[in-house]
Image (cartoon, rainbow, N blue to C red; front, side, top):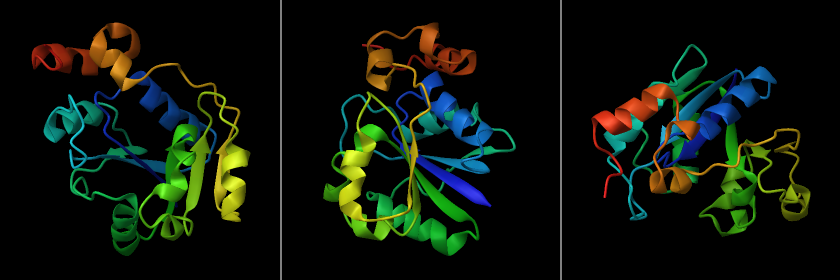
Length: 181
C-alpha cells in the first residue's frame, strides 16, 4: 500500500491541509495518509499544545486518513521516516509542499530521505523541477495540477474565522479558547 506521510505543525489544521490530502487520495497518488503533527522542538512562536493539534486533526480521520499520536517527538524528518519504515510494511511517500523543496538539501540527512518517494505539491508557482534536478533522483513525484488554496496557518491564527477551518476545528478552537491574545 502507498502510504503518504504528511508532517507539519498544523497550528491550526485548516481546509488547505485537508484539501491536499483529499486531492492526493482522490487522484491515486497514495492509498492512505498518516498525518504527523510535530512537537515544539524548534520553539516556534504561538505553537499550541500537541494534544490540541492532534484533537483537531482527528476530526479529519476516516478509513484513509489517520493521525499519528506516537511519532510526534522526532526533531528530524529522516528519523521519523526511518522509524516508520521499520514499523510498517507500506511503501512510504513523503508529502512536501513545493516551498519545502527549495532548501531541501539543508535538511538533516536529506540524502537518506531520497530513498523514499517524495510527493512535491505545487505551491506559490515554484519551479519544482529547477530545485529537484540537482538530486538526480527518480523518486520525486511532482503534483503541478493541484490548485492550492491560498491559506496558511499563520493567516488563520491572526484572524480565526470559519472561512478556512472545518466546522469541527473552528468549534474546537473557540470552545478551548485557543489562539486568543
